[in-house]
Length: 133
Image (cartoon, rainbow, N blue to C red; front, side, top):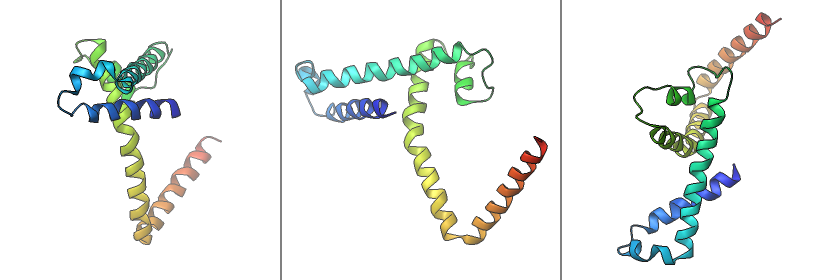
């Protein structure tokens, strides 16, 4: 995970720098730009490894995001699937953290909702533990 975040940081930083006029003409001379290009390639290779691992599963879990991407007939090629896998990894990282933080904050502000949720979760966990016995 740390590798992915470090590579992502370098790639996004270079993307921000690419907004500077005329940088595209000298980017190949800048070590930071070359390193960001390498980072982007490594991230895409990581995504490709995930996709290949999914393809090798004997019985993949149906209905997951990965399953939806891999089995969607509207993709024209593997590169489109790879691009969406990248978006899910990058976009899902911060949004999940923000969603969890926001949810916990709202639950802290509303103890009655927190108590209701706790009760419902206890019911679910107690019913699933009794059904597995």
